[in-house]
Image 1: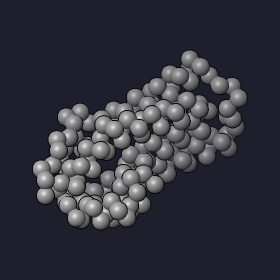
Image 2: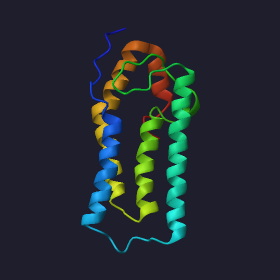
Image 3: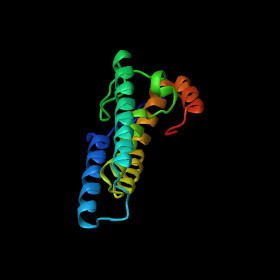
Length: 155
């Protein structure tokens, strides 16, 4: 197996999703969109989406903890986790965070959260996922290759 590439020293994913949420909030203040539905049922649906995304995140984190896998995005992988939500997507925490920020749009009647969530996902893909996947390939070789072949990066 080849040498694992260095990960970023900065834990980009949580910072990027926090920045996306703050940007969506500020854009909503500066450029409100009155046409966006704000009915209580729509807001409740948004809260359900947020709760489901958070649940997906927690399921992924619990699965990683049970496998004693490192969860910090700026630290080397210690295990290849392919069970639980990792059967659905190779990046369940990032997917959950993206859906959660998008859910803020519906819950809070602020559509700016949607492009901010997508921008965060693109940035996470560029700054974290590519490096993480290269590291996993170097560390786990054929086992990673088989997992990557059967499980999509996002959905």
